[in-house]
Structures are given as C-alpha cells and as structure tokens.
Length: 440
Image (cartoon, helix red, strand yellow):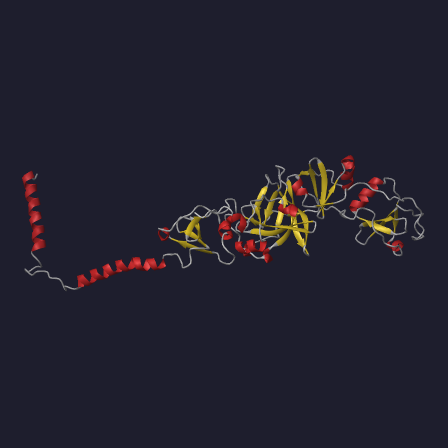
C-alpha cells in the first residue's frame, strides 16, 4: 500500500507536468502565437457597440407622453393600472373611466399608456371624479338595449337579465302568480286579477285549479299592463226574444249559447245578443259566462244557420285572452320577456328552472342606453353597464352622451317598470363631475 510520502510525491509530479504543458508552447519547442492582433479587438468593439445600441432601440418603442398631453388625456401607467386625467398639466388621479370622459370636452378625449418613469417630475393633484360612476363603459357597438327579461325567484324578489337570457327558457301561454296574497293570471302581456270571493270557482272553470300560484313581487307584476279582472259575467238583457235568426233555431233569446262544429272536429261557441247579432266566445269568456249562468240554454246548430246572422262584439272585457295555453310547473320560475313589435313593447311569458334569488345580470362587456317611457311620456335617459346598475344622464343630455362616447341614435325606449328593476347610481353630467374639482 502506498505511503503518505508516495502520494505527496505523485501529486507534486502531476502539478509539475501541468505547469510545463501550459508554459512550454507547442510540441517541438514552438511558441503558440495568435492568428491576428485585430480580430479580438474588433469583436470586443462590436459587442460594446451592440450593448450601447440596445437601450437606444428599446427607448424608441417605449410609450412616452405625446404633445398636448397636459389636458384631456387619460394616462394609464403601464404595469400598474394607475389612471390619471390631465388638467392644466397636472396628473389628477381619477376614480373611473366615466368620470375621466365627463371631465373632457366632447370629441377631445384620448387615452395613452406610459411607463411610470415617464411621469417622474410631473406635478400631481387631488383625486377627481364621481366615486360611484361606472368603472367601465360599454362600447356603442356592444349596447344591447332590446333584450330584457325578468323572472320570479324562490326568494320572492325579481331576477332581471339584460343583453342575455337565462338558460333553458321555454314559452308559456299564461302564468298564475300570487302577489301579496292576491292571485293573477298573466297572458298576452296583460295581468288579470282573480277576485278572492270567486277564486276557487274561477280557477276550476279555467282548468288551472291544480296549478300552484308562483310567488312574485309587485315590481315583476308591474311589467305587464293591468287588465280587467277575470270573473263570471252575464248579459244585462238576457232572456229578451230574438226573431232575426234562422227559423231552424228553437225560440232563441238573448243570452243563449250556440254550439257549432268545425271541420277539425272542434267546437265553436257563440252567444246570442238582444240586437239579433251573435258573438263568438273564446275559451276564457265561455268558461266565465257558463260560471255566471249555470242554467244557460245551449243549442247545437249548423254553420249554415249562422250564415245570415250579423256578427257582433263579444260582451266580455276586450283585454281577456281567448285561451290560456300551457302554464308553468311547480319547480319553475316564470319570466316576463320584453318583445318589441312594430315599435311597441309587448312582454311575453316564459319559464326556466327555478331561480334562487333576485338581482340583475348583464352580459359582460355589454350594456344598454335607454330612455324610460311611461304611458307614452318620455323620461330620463339611463346608461346600464355590466355592473348591473343604471345611471341617469343629466345636464345637457346630448353633451353628456358625446362626452361618454355615445350618440342620440344609440338610445332605445324602454318602459319605466323594466328600468325600475335596476338599482341606480348618481347622475352623470359634466356639472356633477366638475363640482368638487379643486385647483390643487
């Protein structure tokens, strides 16, 4: 086994060999000389030049403050998100985009993004704007003011949807709802109260006694026109003889019902009126007339028997639906859907899976710019954003519209009860936003 002395001698020998190899040059005693004296110098110079040029090139693409930045400019700090509006050469922190636009004259607004170092040395001022104004604004092309729906919820409050529709919506013929203990039938965009004293009989006659009345609030009910109560009725001059009808009928009198079969196997019903005319009754009117006149005489006649008869106006309220169609299931929410027909808003009825709570849902990035109308009278203009809130446009409305980036042709009319579903924020106007701007 090698001793420690042997190991030390071996290490010293290896060291001497390495030193000799590095210092003795090439084999044969020749010195290793560089191929040229200028190549390393040139390479080093090129590298140094590139290192100097890189910052210059990068700086060419760095965002900087443009000419005229001292006013009407929203400055966004790159990488931070901080926002300033420029007023007289000062950077004023601004609460939100709506405030920034309202502080700028129409057509003069611009937005830039710069690095934080570009703002070094520029004087700052106090925060400005309306702290509860919209944080973001929908683009004019993203406005969707005609698609509104509102549904009942398990909690009892209305759940509104704007520029979107709850999934799985199916169309209904009617809805049976209960508002503060009073039952209503909703059909054809109209609400009809069911009188408490005749409630059970009316629901049974209409064939909807097995339906559960879905709880709704007054805000939801207000979406529909208030119509006549659905209740039993009679003719005031029932029993008066009528001699102008076909002789094949047996002693017709006012108030009689005439049953006529049609080609499809169905039946139509007409009521005889004291002036000799006959009027067709729809399913709802027939049920209510028979309920109010349980012993009424019904004659079966042919269509030919009525060919010479004058057709009159049916005696039931004109806003009653002809029939009810399908209703909602117990585990569904019923929805009013705003439909625009030839410029007139007519809500229809739909159903979705039961919604738990009320609230407002607006499709992200979208919104609505609407003018509230009530009974043909035009009201305020409101901006609805995807925050689920509405802001009235105040001051000179045309000026406010232009400051926010909109035009009057972007406005759509919406009945006030629909807009009442959306919580509101402060009025937006240049007067309101400049009110508390201090020169500091």
